[in-house]
Image (cartoon, rainbow, N blue to C red; front, top):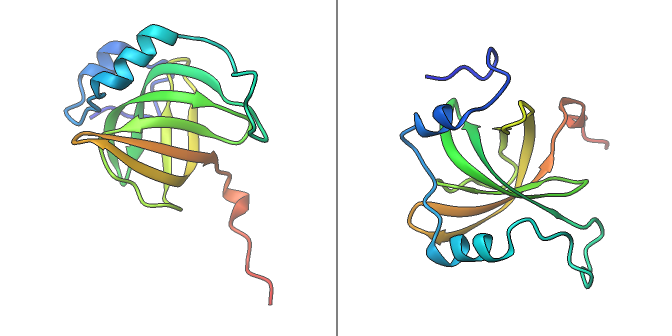
Length: 134
């Protein structure tokens, strides 16, 4: 088992060593090959535009690691493809190739194929656990 606490740089070897792996549908793979690292769309209506990320990543959810693909990133969060269904409000960690380990809160999950779910997240910080006001 890989230990996220000791390693800093994620390698393809680490990613391929995992059994639980995202299998992208052909339509998504074709889109990635066609548009690659194109920038933000000019007609984007979002509050914070998303930049393509298109990197392999390792997801740590409930103590289990899964090979994933990062999709995009914005000022608020990261979108990625995972091999499992994640419930909204779950807290997970995503390890990216440059060594950054992000703590994220799931906001949405949509099934694309048997082993591929499109996940939307926001960055999460422990200080967000505030007591509810009365």
